[in-house]
Each structure stands twice: as structure tokens, then as C-alpha cells.
Length: 596
Image 1 (cartoon, one colour):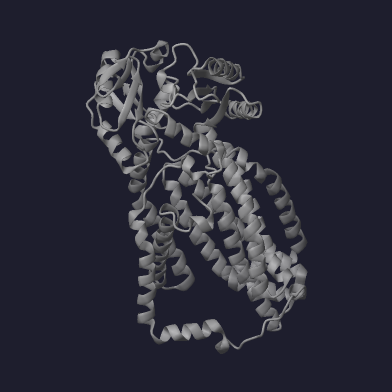
Image 2 (spheres, rainbow, N blue to C red):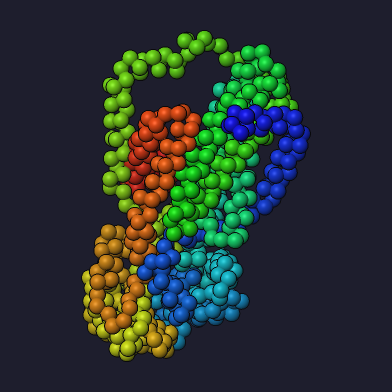
């Protein structure tokens, strides 16, 4: 069956079965609205690591085999009197620690005010102390909620210690809340502006509202897809951001093709039914090829092992296909019902132009008079915009991505500023398969603690700093080892997200060890993630190039068009990435755009 015949049948079906199509569309929107809004509850804030990498293996061993690793929740307790060792502060801190330990779902609590607590849980100024909380499997969110309630109560009641909450679970939860709030704010801004622009294009509310409705269908449909996919596999919460932007953009773009062509066919004297079918036959071909090109290109993200990237493929493919289906079925059915009333609710009438009088016609004529000069000028501008991308710095999401007003970010910054080393950036080094585990860990801890950029190392044989043991092991130190291996918690003295931090990881990985050594943590994960991306990137780019060539060849019958499209896409993406670095990494326009 030829493509034109298929699209003719699609348009005819939408016209003949318009009530059925609209009823199914309405049902779909209700179901998607009810279930899709639950997507936030199943999406994850992780997925940036390669499951087959050394860092992932290290983190997995520490968590599953040794029951250690980064605490789910870190509570920064600040003494009202400025001294955490004052009797009132000790009493209040001990009470808080006991209250947290009594929460349902809490696994372990390590507090400065507990017996045999490590001195590293006390701030350098002595005005704050840490309470480290690990939750039982599946209970971290509930424990976080209880800890936040306790923190609110300490502030309201003027307790001797006030509590601020940070840690991986708190930061992840803050990400989700921030994204959800930003999404609502973005939609409240984007939808009215989009409606105004569509009114300016079409001159009437009804014609402008139809593309917007298709956008809503696409976004809701993708939310439903993410809910379903997130219920059976890991999906990143950051996919939500792509859903709204791409959903509204593509749906409106596709709808403009259909609505504009429909109005042209009506003006040419066709019947309503004939105009709808003709619009689907002609504009639908562009929509179908474009949607399939985008969907296949996004499918290249499925090649990468990190589910953070795969999540963008899930969201992108779902939103593209939903927007295409709504534009080729739901929108034609709506047009068949609206009929010649498409221009009702008109606010103003456009002054009609002959083809050779329009602005874009005159612009194209000017460009074609000097195509080489204009082309070189545009390429030069795009390359100039892309130059900041040469100094792009990649990193993992952390509390700095949160607004300055975020209590979680403030707690994280207080932790980083007030405590010896940066306990919030402690990372594990795992030793497996050693003959004499204690001796092997002792020797490795001496070597690790002697590396520049390391503040201290804690393991089964004690605490190490500057290449020597500075403290004997405590009662909890036994958890650092079993009969076949062990691990150590390494606290850096430098910012691990910096280039120096990445060099530090590389240096540690080169140290000799009696057994198999795995270096974990966020920075090691970032290094491994970049390596995994570099390994799969050629295959992904090859898939995109092949899909673009084949699909655009089917549309145009030319091999030159796909080549030009790929070159222009490369230039525009480079310019976009360069602008992102200049604005967000360098901090330009932060005051105008309101980010930190």
C-alpha cells in the first residue's frame, strides 16, 4: 500500500468515524490524566551510572554486602548556644537521636551524641553535629518525612538544637519537588504565550485552540507512558522536562501543518470532508516522516547503559508518536466536526498577501541572490555561538542544582562549609579477594590517606590521615569487612566535582592493592559514565545518520537533502550547547532567568 493511500484511509476514517475517534480521544485523555499524574510517584532521581562499571560495582558491594555506603539522610544539628558539647545541647541531641532511631523503617542511626561516636561528626567550629540515618529497604521516603517533621518542630519550639536535612534521599526528593513545581510554572507561562502566538497566526481563538489541545493530548499521553514504563523498569524523573517541552512543540508544529492546509483547501472550494482528507494526505506525509525520523533518532539513546539517557528515549518516542497520532486522527476528526466554523471566534482578520508579496518570499529572494555569502555568514554565527561548548564541564546532579532558597541546599552547603573534609562527598574504596583482609586494608588505607586531596580514611583497622593511622577502630568498624574482603570510606579535602577531583580518582585507581580494588562514589561514576557514553556514541550517531538518510530520502528522493539536514543539525546543536554553557555554566543571564 502506498503512503498516500494509507494517509487517505487515515483521513477518511477520521472523517467518517469522527464521533468514535473523539470519544476514544476523550476517554484516553481521562485515563491519561488520572494515571499519568501518578508518574511522579514511580520515577527515579538516579540512573546516571553504567551498571557494568567499576564505580557501580563498588557502590553495589558496599550497600548489599557490607551494609554501608552513603547515608540516606544526613541531619545537621546546630546548637542554639553555639556549643554541641554544652549540657543542654547534649541532652537535646541525644533526645533527637533516640527519636529518630525509634522511627519505623530506620535501620541504623550514627549520631555525634551516641556512645563512641567519631569526632568527625562534630563541626570544626563546634557549633554543629551530624546525625547519620540509614533507612530500611523501601522506607527511606517515609523516614525522610518524619525527619523533616522533627526538623520543623525543632525550629518552631525553639529547641536547643535546630535540625537541617540533607543526604542523598533528601536531595533526590528535593529534585522531584523542584521539577514538579518548575513544570507547573513553565506550563502556566508557556501555554498562554503559545495561545497568543497561535491567535496571531490564525487570527481566531478556535483555530488557535486546536493545536494547543493536541499538545495537551501529547503531554498527557506521554505521562501515561512514563507511568506504565516506570512501573516495570527504572525511569528518570528528568524525562518529565522533555515531555512538556517536546510535547507542546511537536504537537503544535504538526497541527499547524494540518490546520493551515485544511483552511487552504476550504478556501480553494473543497467540501469540509474533502479538505480534511486532502490535508491529511499532503501535510500528513511530512508529519509522519518527521515524527518517525525524530522517534528513530531518539531510539539511539536506548543503546546507552544508563537509564537516565534511556528515559529520554522512552519519553521522546512516546511524545512524538502520541503527537503524530493525535495530529493525524484526533485533529482531523475535530476539524470534521468544526467544519467551516474553523474561523469563528475570530479576533481580527489577516490582510491577505499574494504569494510574491509575503515577507518570507521577499526574504528568500534576498537570500538566493547571494546564497554563498549568506550561508557563510550564518555558519560563522552558529560556530561562534558554539565556541563556549569547547570549555563545557560535565558533572553529576547535586544540591547546587536546587534553588538557593531550598532548605536541602542550605543544609548541604552548611555541611560542606562546617565540617572537616567534605563528609558529604565521602566515597567508598572496596577491596575484594584479599588473603589477609585486615592487613590488606591497613596497607591500602595508608597509601590512600597519603594521597594529596584526601582528608581521612576510615576502615576496619581504624582512621587514617596523612599516610598513617591516627585513631584505633571503634565498635562500628567491624562492618567495614567480612571474611573475603572489605571497604573503606574515603573523605576528600577537595571538591570532587572539579577536574582535580577527577584526577584524584584516576590516581587512586592506579594504587597497588592486595586483591581486586573498586573505587566508587559520584565522581568515579561520572568518569565511568563518560567512558560508557564515548564507547556507545559512534554507534548511536551512526544509527541517527542512517535513519535520517533513509527517511528523508523517502520524503525527498534526494541523498543531498539528508546530508544537508545532518550538517545543519550539527551546527544548530553546537550553537545550542554553546549557548547553554555560556548561560548556565558561566552564569550569564542568571539574574534575568533566575537560576543559580
